[in-house]
Amino acid sequence: MGTYVLTGASSGIGARTKEGLLKLGHQVVNIDYANGDIQADLTKDSDRQKAIDEVFALYPDGIDGVICNAGVGPTAKPEVIFALNYFAAVRIAEGLRPLLKKKKGACVVTSSNSITQSTVRKDWVDTLTNVADEERVLEFAREIPQESAHSCYSSSKYALSRWVRRVSGSWAVDGLRINAVAPGNTTTPMTANLTAQQMEAALLIPIPTRYGKKEFLDAEEIANGIIFLSSKQASGINGVILFIDGGIDALLHSERI
Image (cartoon, rainbow, N blue to C red):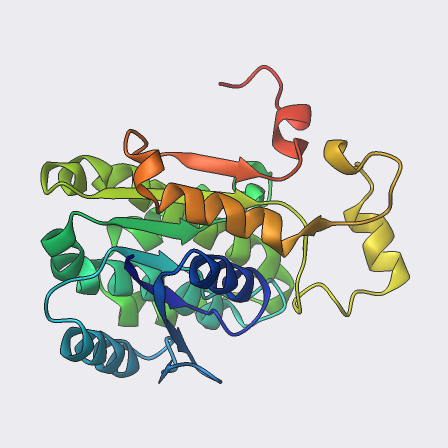
């Protein structure tokens, strides 16, 4: 059985992923700011490095998978969205890459199906992916008004997906795979407190696999995709953004390949 490191596995999609891996007999370490096996505030680079060092100390012979799931939604401050959704995921993935290399493992990151929506700001995506200085980027983010947080969220996830595609070739040369999942509306603690009006707005376009029902996808459905991509069964899959949204993206962009 394998050893997997997850971020943000204390609740929601991360928790269901952890449960699924444990049921398969794998060893799982959760990096989270609360109730984690390794507690860390991943918006801070010092805590990211601390978490990476702890994983190296625990598993010097290598790990089989890294799942970068920790993130915040569009109600958070823009600088927090960029720091956690993009910079933390990249830092953890790259920081643990040497341990993955020892076992020819795989990395999966959690994106969002919002990456194909009009709220994405490509100039912000370029800022995230092309400017390596996190401090400068977050300084810029603090000037973004809170009403633009939805664009910050979708842009951060788009940037993460772009990064996965960019590095997938170089990771493959080292015998590694890296992919992303793009969930649609999912029942998690982040969505549990939506008002009836907000729920109605979110389901304005019904989820095809939930047609006739006013409900979101289950977190376990997303977790199943993450577990598959991180497994040896997905050995031929690299640099892919797997949409797990019940068919919403295909419905809205049926002519796009």
